[in-house]
Length: 470
Ligand SMILES: Cc1cc2nc3c(=O)[nH]c(=O)nc-3n(C[C@H](O)[C@H](O)[C@H](O)COP(=O)(O)OP(=O)(O)OC[C@H]3O[C@@H](n4cnc5c(N)ncnc54)[C@H](O)[C@@H]3O)c2cc1C
Image 1 (spheres, helix red, strand yellow):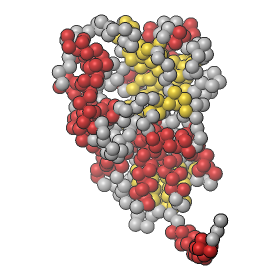
Image 2 (tube, protein in one colour):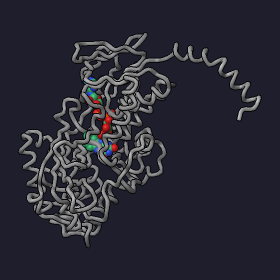
Image 3 (cartoon, protein in one colour):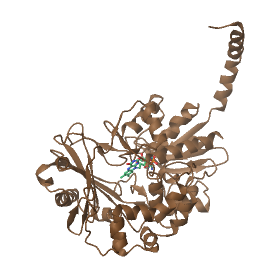
Image 4 (cartoon, rainbow, N blue to C red):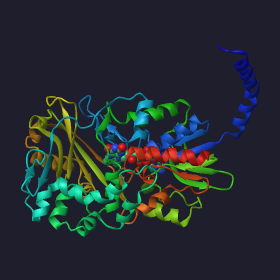
């Protein structure tokens, strides 16, 4: 119902509306976003909501970058998540988009099934019954604490200090303090024996920065549950891309080869099927991992500090080999399909419907040195190696095996690595990675303290939107 006051107010507003519109149009800013991963897409989506004119330049014929679900060659209904797989219930920015686009969540790892540890030729199921008699030289105290108890006690100190931190932007101080050590050095410094370190870090890389590992734990620590998007996680970037495609705001097959700026604007030079082109705007957002951006900024007048991190930030090679199994036979034995091992396959995960009678995926998830070794093998040998390791950890795998898919992020020319691998002392680079340089802004998981997660890509995009609109 409109009374006289609201009518007059509305009339006054409409009288001014055209003027406002013209002013807005005059002031309309154009932003060129380089890279159509989750960071570039979220940034463009939010800027467009605010009335900016945006264009996303994506090198591949698809959006989503490291959120890539494979379905082809696998049984209908199975989604092989080559990159982002699980969403912690604490990752509110990722979950907000899941809600906004009406996507359905399902539990990532349901049921009360047990994980396996494979060590020195033996399988152990610590979740069932007492702590196993590990074939290691452990002190009496280490044996008493067990694998979980040691992880809790020795990783727990810095995490306890930061557990109430509400700052979602920076790496907490007590974690940065431990960033000068590798994980191995950090654990040994606290008195853990060599064998105990092996047990605690099994299936992980003990030469990575202790700070990075603590940060990963911190970003998950109050998580009670993990989710997966029913039908595949690629629906998340897919939904953002669909919105942007509607207004023609994404250009696929556009490989950016240079980014530059001067006092009046910024630009991206690109190659596509039709040749070369320069796309200009008021600002450029670089949403590329630094692994594929090393040679892009010759004309960008970047600070020496920024040039250094772009040149030196390292990425872990990451491989996943997916084995489609006729039945999820491990469930019938009370096992989850998850394992940490000292084999080349390092870690096994499982994805599939609830019923053990239905087909499912058993996958190896290999990060760092072992992934580099896998990358020297051809695809067939990787599958054979993974199947041989799966048979050791989950006897019967060979009989159930039907089909395989392989993904190497190190070999992917659009990524050149899977996850940012901050070495000791390098977590302090995050603010440098993120810092704007004139008209060029920087988004991507490597610019966020939530690095290694979709939440990092989204948080970085929201930060850049704030910087541009400030
Ligand atoms: C193996 C693995 C497991 C993971 N597991 C999880 C998980 O369980 N949960 C979770 O939340 N997150 C997970 N992540 C992390 C998550 O996938 C990433 O943090 C996030 O997707 C990164 O998004 P981004 O936009 O920063 O970068 P990217 O996704 O790397 O996007 C960069 C984009 O730039 C494009 N590009 C590259 N070069 C050019 C060029 N020259 N010109 C134009 N375009 C170019 C690429 O094609 C790509 O689309 C995982 C990642 C990996 C690799």
